[in-house]
Amino acid sequence: MAKVILLSGSPRKKSNTVDVLKVCAEAIEAEGVETEIVTLRGMKIQSCIACGKCAEKGNCILNDGLDEIIEKIRDAQGFIPAAPVYFGTARADIMAALQRIGKVSRGTDRFLDYMIGGPIAVARRGGQTLTLQEMTMFFPINNMVIVGSNYWNMVFAGAEGTALDDVESIETIKLFGKNVAKFINKDY
Image: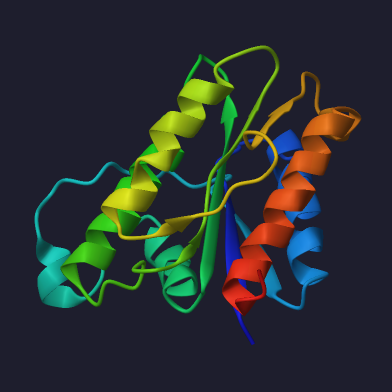
């Protein structure tokens, strides 16, 4: 069965970002595609050191748990990273993760080629569009397919547990999830 990995860059236990990913996952699963939400919470993701060892060894030599996530992505047909926005851009750990995921793919079997997906940003007031732009750069450089919706994949949320109150954005996320599944199923 086809699968989509949804990656949360939120460090919070009660995470708006995870709440949004759950909505997205439900929309994907309603179209017959399996999902798994993975989180960077509690991990200390290191930045890529461009050592090139992934091309030799088949995985990243930095030992911080990201290789386990990379293996999940390697076996998937879709990938959706989501970042909370605290200071106007994506958190550094999710960007470090994306750069290393891309480096391993490019240095090994190019598992990201033609993978379906797109990014999601969650913030209280602003920075979502810049975060989406920053995270979107990951997709074309890795020969991936970015799927759209009826607006940008951004949700406004302040306090923990408020993401679902942004009804319009949640509908955008649902349509995005549905579209990801339709492209994976080639039913569009």
